[in-house]
Length: 160
Image 1 (cartoon, one colour):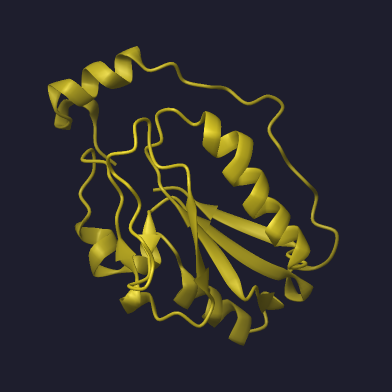
Image 2 (cartoon, rainbow, N blue to C red):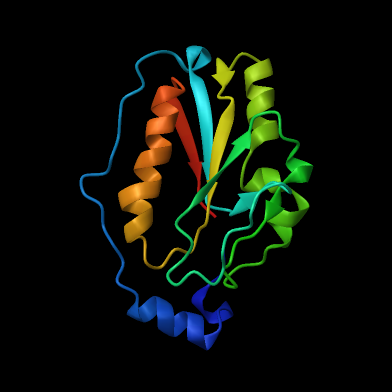
């Protein structure tokens, strides 16, 4: 993680002026069964897309509020990182997409019986959404409902 001195002046000024939001109380649900019996889905703010999907729109004012579904059988080498932020080094995500969407790690946990199953799809969305109104009002509830319909017991959200 960068220290503020490593960021450009424009990014430091933006962060100083940004209206940070606090969500209270923190949304939380207690796990109702052992993890070894749970269906797990991943969510990532890395802005990953597949070659067949439209990239996230980096010209969308306030940040692209859409999401992309990533099938479980996807090879992480097929993921294309389209995160718009210039405030971090993208080399790690491009070298190993598991840093932002740990599909290979979750497959290993499933094979070892630590988790019950992986959902058939996972969600990718854009981080660095500076105007999150549409995302929180429409996109997040829609993909959350889809995960409920998929009988997902636990979602692991990976912030980038």
